[in-house]
Each structure stands twice: as C-alpha cells, then as structure tokens.
Amino acid sequence: MVKRKAIMIGAGLANMAAAVYLIQEGKWNGENITFYSLDDHGSNDGSTDKAQAGEYWNKNYPMNNTKGFIARGGRMLNYRTYVDLMDLLARVPSVTEPGMTAAEDTRDFDAHHRTYDKARLLKGGVGIVDGGKLGLNNKDRLLLTKLVMMPDSQEERLDNVTIAEYFKDDPHMFQTNFWYMWETTFAFRTQSSAQELRRYMHQMIYEFTQIEHLVGVNRTRYNQYESIMLPLIKYLQGQGCHIILNRRVTDWEFKETTMQDEITVTGLVMENTETGEEEHVTVDDDTAVIFTNGSITDAATIGDFNTPASENMDYGAASSLWKKATEHFYNLGNPDKFFADRDASEWVSFTLTTNNHLLLNEITRITTQEPGNALNSFISTEPITPLGHEDVNMSIVVHHQPHFTTQKPNETVLWGYFLYPRRHGEFVDKQYIKMTGKEMLEELIGQLSKVDPGPVNIKSKKKEIMASVVNCIPVYMPYASALFNNRAKSDRPEIIPANSTNLAFTGEFVEQPYQMIFTEQSAVRSGEIAAFHFAGVPMKRLVKNPRYDKDPKTLFRATKKMFE
Image (cartoon, rainbow, N blue to C red):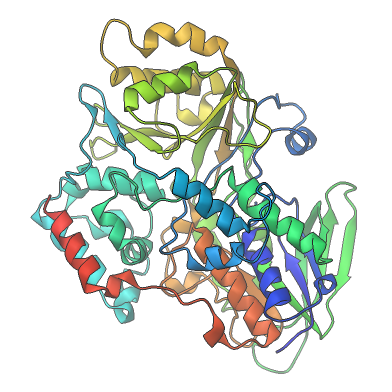
C-alpha cells in the first residue's frame, strides 16, 4: 500500500493537507505530488473560498460586474475542536505576518480580537433577543438529551432520519432561541440529517453554554483564502508540488482483475477547460490517487448589483466523478443523497462592498458591538414555515475590517446569507433566489429597520447607504448544505475504501466517525489519514482529538444551561 507519488484530484483544503503531511511526515519529495483542479481557491471541498472579485471571476463570468469583493461563504474556527487544522497551520508560514506560522498568525489575531456577540438574534418589536434564554421545554430537553446520550454503537438508528422527523412530536423545538442560533451558527435545516446533528451536539456540546455570545469562535486575521489556503499553496509550491489548474477530471480507468472488489486506478480522463481538449493521465503502481469527492461550491453562480444569480443545473464536477466511481464499485457511497436534492441543500449568499463606513457604523449602533464579533440573525415577526412557525429570515456576518489585504481603508465588506432561498423577502416581494444584489441590500436595510425604532433610524439613511455601494454580489450555491443532507452512514465512502490499493477519498463527503462535517477540521483530518496511509506512517501518530461529550463537567454545564 505504501506509495512514493500522488495525484490529487482537487486542490482544496483536504488535499493540500494531505500533501503537507506526505512531505513532512512521510518524507516525500514535493515534486512527486501533482494536483489537478478547476482552480486554486478551495472549491473542491468548499472549506474556503477565494475572496476578491477580479481575475478569476472576470475569466469565468465575463458578463458580470466584477467590482468589489466576493466571498461565497466563510467559516468560524474553534481551537478546542479544530486540533488537526491548527496542527496543519503550525507547519506552514503565514503569508501576511513575517516570522509567524499560519497558526501563530491566527492565534495572535484572535487573542487581540476576542469574539463576544451581543446581538446574536434580532427581532422586530423586540430588538436584541436574550439568546441566553434558550426557550426549551421539558420535551425539547428530553429529546436533546437522548440525542447526546445515544451511544456511538447505536448511531445507525438515525440513518435516513431528518431533524424534522426526530422532533416530529415536538414542533416547539423549532421555535426556540436554541434552534434559531444552532441552525444559523452551523447551517442546519429541518431537512438535515439527525445523525449529523448528533455529531455536532457531541463535538460542540461545550458551545451549549455560550452559544448566544459565540465566545468559543475563533477567526483568522483576513479571509480564509489569504489566511489559510494561500499559506498552504505557497508552501507546497516551494516544495516543488505541481498545481495544474483548469482541469476537470471526467472519468476513471480501473484495473481489470480477478480479485473480488479490488479498487486500483490505472488512469484518469480529464478536460482542459481552457482549450476544451481531452487529456489522459496514466497512474502507475507507485502512485496514490487522493480524490476530494464533493464540493459545496460546485455549480455556484454569481450575479451583481442589478442581476440575480442564475441557476446552474450541473450535478457538480467532483460529485459527477464520484458517481462515475460508484458505477464500478458498490462500496463507494451514494452521491445522489447529497447532490440530487437541491431543495435540501441550496443557499443564496451575498457580499456587500461599500466605499465608506456608514452602513457599518449603523450596524454597530443597532447591535451595540464592534465589527468582527457578530453573526446577526433576523427572526421573522410572522409565520414563514410550512408548519406556520416563525424562523430566521436572513443572517449577516460583519467581519473585522479589513477582511482582505487589498481592501482600502475607507471600504467596508460584509457577508450575508439566506438559508432558505425559496422563501419570500419581507421588504422585497420576491424569492431571495430571484433578488439582485440591490434588492438583497434593501431587504437587509428593512430587517435592520425593524429592530431600530424611532423617527431617525437606519431607514432614513437608505439613500446615502445605497450611494455608498461599490457592489453587492449575490451567489447561488445549489449544494451549500449538501453535506448535511439526510442520509445513512453507508452513503459516504470510507477514506480508504475496502480493497482499495491506491484510491483514497477526502473532504466533507467521506465517512469519519465522530467528526463534524462542514468544518476545516474534518477536511484536514481526512487528508491527514489518507497521507499517513499511503506514506506508511503509523495511525497512532495522528493528531489526538478531544471528546467533550465524554467529559462529565462539560455535560453537567450543558444540562444546567438547558434549564435557563
């Protein structure tokens, strides 16, 4: 099984992590590692995203206005659980802070900019909601306790069970402050997997006691492309790794063998997306193939201030290749569970750039907190769910400024999203998915005005705010929540499938016991395991992961919080 060369399908965080561990733990020569990817901004596992509109967007979306910045998404870190990520970042230099590793850079920034959210939930007629009061009743508490206390050996009881089905006799759960904060902190939906909810409750149980303030959240100095991905790219390039872009791998060649179920990749077929030409790569016996088998940013489209983002019906580059593999072997999962149900997985987000800080100052005044501390979610004031419940209309993240190294001192950048894009706006009578960037900003100003009563509120400054806009770029992501889609454990492949001689799977669509998907932690962990396997490094040297769900003190504090 030990190899000396590797082909990486996808240049996202998981595969870059694998390459670093192959070089540093496996003592490989970086020149023996080759990446094939559509681009270098992390889209192949969806963990991070290239941030600035410009050359990439101009090349791929020439009809769109590319002024301003864009971040299709962003992640919050957590040192207590993201131990593999921090180990990885400690191995590469920061690209913005001389003399620091990427881990030291992040810890230094976070030490000077602690998160303390004062306005986690906002509601019209109320203003800032006291999120410390979770609003749980005894039935809510009982079902949550059963979920947390369910033994790992019984987790398969939650195969193909949605969160809505788990709480089917307890509709009250979905009207609690706990649910509003949990769904918007982690991007769960009622259609999401109850199995994934259980894993999050296990790994993040200590967040129960502080979720209203997000004090356990850590952030990078700049956007995660510049603070996480770029240090990895620069390091791997310096080690001689080959990063070949504009390549979409479209098919496999597998060894024909009499051995039952043996999985051996012998070749890859790919398209050069610049020339349209088909290319072929032979995989020899000394080469591992490490494949990130799904991307939450695949098939994403963008609009601009006056144009909504269109819908791209592509099944996805990574997931299409995954599906091709499942046509050959039965034990590689079921990509349709994740990529054939857009109703359960789609998002719309937007990135707003302004040429002054008027809107930023207004949000600071309304929320009573400085930029960088906030994930503000706006609760509806009327029923908007099929069951006639209230829910969250939209959420915004107000970053510490500047969020990009090329951002001008006078510019503000903030990001927001609509978890249910087919719902209608409250101030713009359209589905969110059909809104232009301008209309999304109008919806945001309307939501802010609901929690800003008085004769001189943010609405009176709407004209000035609109005049300050450089761009507001909407992004439609059909698979943004795909990794939470309802499924069984067998619907995701193992990192090293049974009987595989040279193929590994990495990223957010692989099965890893106890790991939370939709995190940089799970992405890095998968790459680390694949690297150790093919380099012959003992698995006992993997980074040790904490289990807070086994800690009595943590469980006691969480139980106490349930009754507040």
